[in-house]
Length: 132
Length: 130
Length: 277
Image (tube, rainbow over the protein chains, first blue to last red):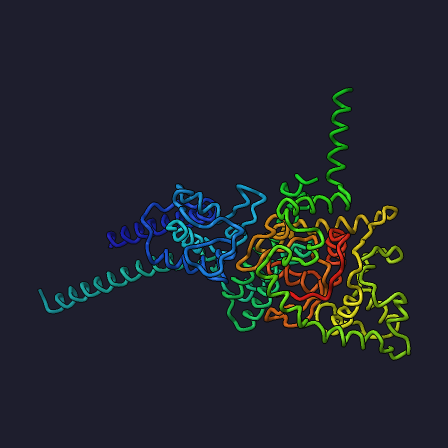
């Protein structure tokens, strides 16, 4: 019986701790995303591609040339050699999240700050764009 | 040991087994409950009842009005509020709260966007031409 | 003392440059576009994106051979000539008509507002107990097409009278609207039509703002148009594209924007109604 009590209380402590860290982590990912060092998961890259090239969500093609994407615009630079241009993945994410932070006159949509895409969607787009 | 004693022992053992089972389930229930609770909290939908939904809509409408007062309202804010009200009618309070929160956030962002530009500034690419 | 004088001078200079007048604005826009499109002659700006888009221009010229806005002009002429229920008509309100498009927008001292042609048309109707026309779609485009066609070749000459500070305030308000980033996509008019003029959104070439107002109303072959629409309908569409809530057609915001935008086209010939993609 005492063993059981100890077990339950341990579980409670672990869960609360997990809950607390989960909570306190949330605002962090919103502002300054931690760069994910793990190699790109093809599923995530594919999901990112769908968001980036679709017209309703990212619509990156409206302004950027991407691979063989149909009727790309040219307001922004072509999305090529992204790893060379953004060795730090977090910088790429910050640019997509809010390009006007680095340059107030940037024409780019602040996808994260103005919630055009969710943080999760931006993570996926970053994974895809970084492969280009 | 009498039969009665044996019976009592077995009963006690059974009771302990049951108690163990109850405790195990209780522990699982507590853990699951906490997990569910934290997920719900994380999604901002701990309470999805009519009163909470109505409060969220009131907040969204105030934010929308604030944005509109500086000509900063966004295109879909009104639509989100309308759909939130519809969701309330349909009893889908979680959906209503989600939409209302979205509208509130848009209202606040649109307001900030407008007031941050309250002073006219000619952008540098054109300013160089004066 | 010297320091004070210098700072005063600096203050004065900044105040002057921040308060650049309409003519300084127009010259700055023209200088900017000339830098981007050195080979485009000034009068070509009246053709909008087709001044800088040779491929689009070929299609446009083919469309103009059988103008899709012709039936609108014809219906507009009937409207112009047909008397109201009280026996009077547009001719009585606009004795100089129908070639009057170049007189708008203008500052209306009595009412203290920017008077546009559609607003003047509806004030005429109201004075004669007729129901006002809608400002974006429908019959207003017929009469506007007729007036525009009759006004072809007239030169844009918008004035901001210096002796009425309210006129300058209206102009400044329109200018402020033009440069304010709005909507979830965070674009201003200038983002697309100055900063990125000549570049493409998808396949569409962004037009310069000098020349934006010369050719209204416009027949757009775009799916959700397929008809002639007003300038304020176009403003509405632009604002929706950038995910901003549009202003009211012919409300003060859009009229003031039209005032500023029209001033930029001073010196260009009117060539409406127009045809666009």
